[in-house]
Length: 508
Image (cartoon, rainbow, N blue to C red; front, side):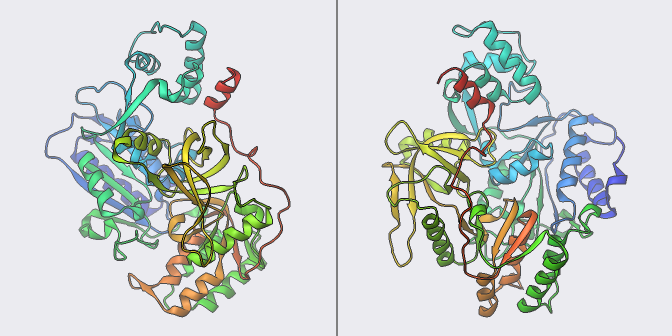
């Protein structure tokens, strides 16, 4: 194949060649477009690291295209189909739904790590429809499904390439064709992992068990996972296994947000100097805003990023107060953050189902209203491929100076949620929003404390991660004030997936 050299910087081209050579060593030749059967004992790990704007995502996308053109099958969290002898596979993973959705918007079929660690168990009858849609079987005759329903499924699949979406278009619910989940018991082949700086040691070992060939893409300037002593999984790799991208890609060169992020690498830069840089950028470019208050309208979809828990709780309570949210219930449109799932071991199947639907720790969701059963919530999972979920919920609203949170909405057990109008910078890793508000007084406190992480002042790492969450606009909030909302909370701005539209049309 022809290397897309015109789109690559020199270090990107070198990294592409190095990854290609590693793949050639395990039987996948991108230059010749030839794929050999997998060979026992061949394995390896590579890491492609670089700061924001260095082109990691572009490189990952080009490698995906080259592997697909060479005949490698793409495995997603969607549907895998029948195993073929000697087939070569690629799965593209991210730690969170939001991170996976960023890749999918660029045409890369990414899914979450959890959707690969656990595989769905399909109903055999409805799996025949999936096999037919994927070109692995004849058009089936299914009792209870009309020819028109199968035609709808086929039409949907041709334009969206989603088996669950196509089955929903035929009038089936997820619980009809997915009967459960199980831990993957057979390895796959090649794995690409984006946002690898978020991986902890346990996730890394899980991935090594599944993928003989693993390539991780990460940013060494981000915050290390909690309890990792300031290190990231690729820090432990030998030098030849780490490929560094140092040049900022051409299309990012005039981005004032990235200019600020990269300025933090200057060891002589102090906090007050950096704030003057932010103020100067704000005067020169509308993509950077010197904010005198927190914009409450943005908080419903893009949380304020803070360092301290106390700040997070104060902002959340202020957000609810200005929206006149009652203490005993949630309003439609309130943002939540999944804090895990509280279910006993006997409900393991339900836990796996909820996690596979996107309710993993750190997932951002929007409350759509109470469910039909007591204690259930209807939720929109931001960034998920099938975002509409109904789940038993325990919602916790934390209060200052109160040890126990206030719980306006709770089932006996199920998915637990914290309010999501403000989140810590640690939890924001892996996510991106068009506009991001960074609460600068918190970073000033971190700077005054003089804390250091992995040899760098903590405030700089916090600022770097927070700033690089912004895709279009950065708001550097310098005062502890909150604006008034210009409109009430809403849910009509959320995309309604085809599955939900189909059920509405059928009167479900």
